[in-house]
Length: 324
Image (spheres, rainbow, N blue to C red):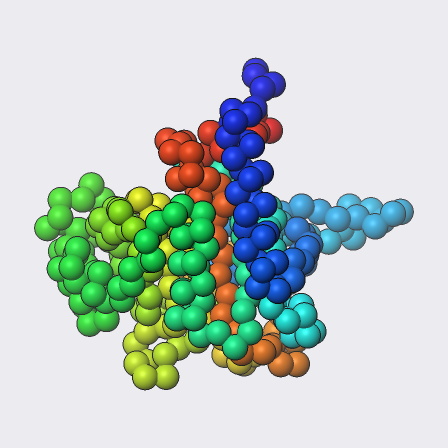
């Protein structure tokens, strides 16, 4: 068993320098750095995310009276509570956790940069994300393309009009090794699979690429477009084959957000998964009034992979899960 870090000391120095650059970027823009909790009484309801859980027992309590807590998959809910409390524009660099496989681009514990800008829509925030990338990589401004156009270009289907059978046929036509897809009945699962396999691998190769206006069914915590109800005001950032960031023109309607969480849980149950507790703190914050804003989460470890031209995420993390 190796006790040594998987990342070289030189890469760890680059990591530290990159974090300093990011903090300076936000300091120059008067964005407040915040620090929120890693454990929460509730968690995400997303079908495709798996949270770590732990049990908390107060002093003198017994196991039967313990409370289940969840390690955060991102600091989003807590940061929105700060926004609703009047924090103004904020950012955070912190650890997040997802109970999923480790691999070339994944570690169950990872570092995330998340920030929120009051009064911004998703286009304003896309511009700021591009500025950060330009500062970190001395690259050209990010190109922008709608999800619909990117899907048509690389898959050959209109994702806003195609059927489940159209997507299954596309899997066959592109000779993808995915027998499971022919039995899949969730449209978004197939959309996401084809997007990962055929779109992500072909965009943002020389300059960063922003894909925006995702299907409304994949809105997550984003607003639905007022001009086209088929799409959500959500974007993702890709560069050199890696998905780096996911951003939203944030949903501020508490009732709609509560219903989305309920719909997620219904989908989880339909897929033989346990429903997850809805974060009532977040709902209460939305009810009290979340300012109009946009927010984005960016993966620091993947960003650093590009900075040092690493082939594996372990090369930019001191102690990944296999050395933890």
